[in-house]
Length: 348
Image (tube, rainbow, N blue to C red; front, side, top):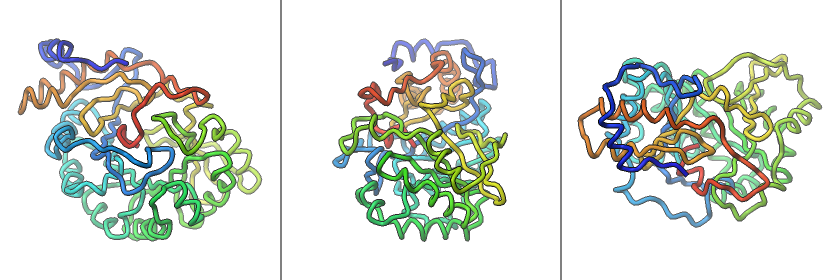
């Protein structure tokens, strides 16, 4: 585990002045996409994301909304074009809409997007669109009420489906469904989920479960269902045509022939996408996480609070952090996870 301590931070802060306006790691990859978790709290308790009885961070350990905005501004000034707001469930944080509005106004930012579980969209979709959010991803793993309750532990499927309809009416550029596929849990539903996406003019991405945190509801090795198996299942009902379209994330997209919908596959196990990684994550407690599947990180909260109102020191720390971005993640679905943090703390 590599978390830069105060000694390294001091070296960063004393480093030469910023000379580059781009974030480029030691493997030549340009980082222009930032995912920001604004809360570790959520109104769901999805079995692959967190424990049923979670202990959340105390408020003083969490970045303030003002600190998040400052960090977003620093990243945009360093060439980040796309910011995705995540959680936990980002829309349960008080002040989330104001924060989104302020981030959306940052000069140079090309795209502000959000990932949500959909529980708040019925009442907040129009406000999100007005705040400047261009695209929205909504987690939806099943279309069966009982199974939805089983997977989320606390969620209400009909509330989420109403939220999706509200998002459609709000007029986002694209709406995408994200489905984590677990063998013998929801893998039999992949065709139904694609049909739902097609019927509603949505995109959908299927995600191989990522081994973050200790889960007690299923064995990850037994529950693993690869993207190739999903494609085989979909081929029985749909014709998928390979597409070169990208949205800045890790999905490989296929067009559903005869429709406007796309099907994406996020395959950290079966089709490693690290060679083209353009992303970093800012966790809710202010760690700049250089890779989802490693602990290489820098404590940007410490830089912020040690040197308030000094955005150049912050930018220098971000630039220097690119030196420790690893080449690839080390996920192994057949072993206990090396990464003990849960997805809700990392940012989905």
